[in-house]
Amino acid sequence: MRREAAAMSMSVEQPLWRALTAYRALTAVYAVAIAVVARDSYERPQVAFGYLAVLLVWTLATLPRFTGAARCTRPFLAVDTGLALAGILLTPLADGAGRHAADGPTLPSIWTAGAVLACALKGGWRWAAAASTLVGAANLAQRGEASPNTLHNVLLVWVAAIAIGYVVEVARASERTLARALEIQAATRERERLARDIHDGVLQVLAMVQRRGTAVGGEAAELGRLAGEQEAALRRLITQGPVPEPRTAAGPDAAPEDDTRPQDLMALLGRYADARVTLSGPGTPVELAPHAARETAAAVGAALDNVRTHVGPRARAWVLVEDEPDQVLVSVRDEGPGIPEGRLAEAAEEGRLGVAQSIRGRLRDLGGTAELVSVPGQGTEVELTVPKQDEGGGGAATGRRYPARTGGGTQ
Image 1 (cartoon, rainbow, N blue to C red):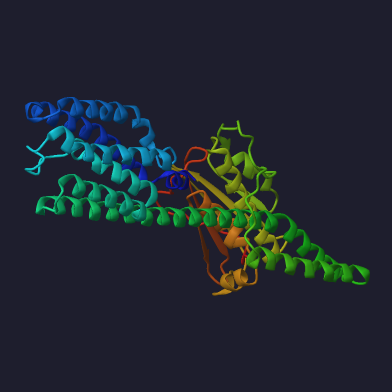
Image 2 (image 1 turned 180 degrees about the horizontal axis):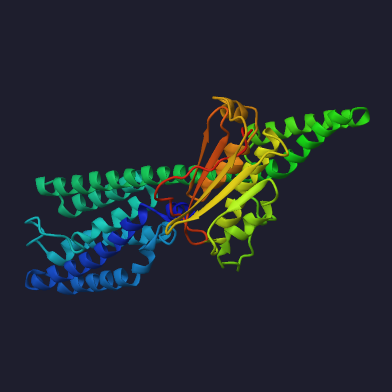
């Protein structure tokens, strides 16, 4: 989840806005420095330094505006561009015929490019083309002729501004695509989580009602038939239906927001131990983040449900927990007939999500792995690898993978 949040908060534009802020400040100081060095050549220095004083104050006062596109409104950019155009057109008045005739710099000098680039970052290549065209026309007007140097500078600003504006538009489109992809991914994960919850509860009950009703016969058989139909319809819904909206309320197995204390996995697994399920593990607590501990215990519960469903209610199963420095390994093994090759793929297509969602899906969300090893006639083992991480962390599992076994099939 942290990686998704970081991706959502990234913006290609932000570094460009920061660079533009620095560019405007530096070029304003540069324009003033040029004027100070050439002060004796101005025919009307009061015009030059009056304009440059306004330019410097405006630049420093408006630096906070350039933190993003939201604060650079159209009226603001119009005034900013107008200030650049005014400086260009005032250059002949301040300069006289000296440097002006010799292709000397305009009063705002290269600060003008900052105004054009701001339009490019705000509105894309169309705004950039409009602003650079106005600047180019002002340069040609104040020169009175289209000299090679003037044409070169005008063309350079025009091409650079349009190119940057186009890149910004492409970056924005890419960010929108990424944001949409992350939304779909989050919705898909929520759908998978809901599918696990349904499989662990409603589907299991409906399947049991169908089996018991059919076995009893009579009116109970009709009830079992209806339960079977509802089970099939619900399986189709969770495998083929529309992606549900993310839930705003926490589920029944969600931890309280202030619950950050590690939980003992052995304590959670202890409820599964009975005469037919043997639980083995360290003599000390096996601590995991609360969400990771609950999800791991639920995956083990799903594996044991498969043992009872597909091997038999009296089938033996063994749960082994190993606590390693960077991960927890859990193995669930049964004595069933094993799973025929290709059966798991068929079960997923039929909407039976015991392995696909209740086990593998849970471990994938935790950054771990769930592997199933089954040899016909020798039982099945499901190997769970759970990385140790902080609640909400996104670390991946490391180290070797240890299989955990579950009931001779898992559909």
